[in-house]
Length: 253
Image 1 (cartoon, one colour):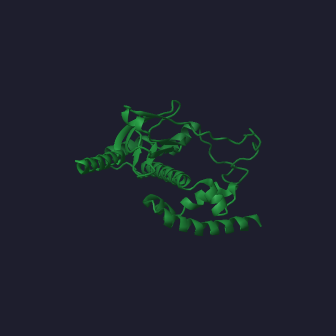
Image 2: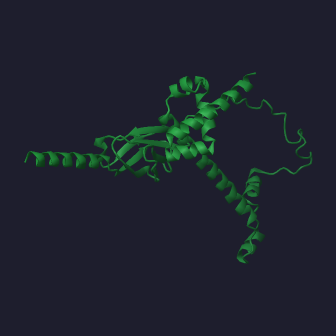
Image 3: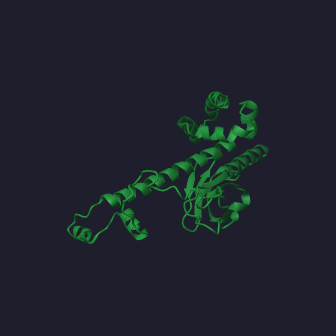
């Protein structure tokens, strides 16, 4: 009887432990009243599972107790949130984020008013001047009534449209790359504290942030971050730290 009780106790502990480690999907909403919260990237640092918020800032993602979620977007300050047992009993967790503040340099109006396209030789003195409406028309692709006939005939010029689409696509791709780098930098900060970079790698504290940006430009570093191979990552970071310090030293000469 005593043996059976012991076996039941062990089985109960194993089942309980197993239940604690199972991931569950939770819902949440990002709150920031002044700007759009659509398209915020959410990543579970422990599992690398990702999600993206919708137009209302709502999202869902699989987590377990103790996991850390990182929220990032180009126009918002990154935010970390650690999952607690209480979160599983809530209908939705709320994540408050802040808009990134961008400081602009002082602008002196008319300081260089004497400099213009004619003085610089960009255009001739007799160059035709366009009104604001004409300039907007030119940017839009210089649509003329004759183009409407082309549209009806199935032969409307596509270059202005394609150029506009391509330009917007390039900007979107650039924004996505920036967000990916921001997520990688947050991951580095989660895996390695400031003291690791300063005391162990010998990178001066004022250069640590720059070193992180230097690291995420390396494709192998990003790959190891995704695969969570910390030992290989540390080895590579040590090598790159030596190169980075050499770059800093050469710039200070």
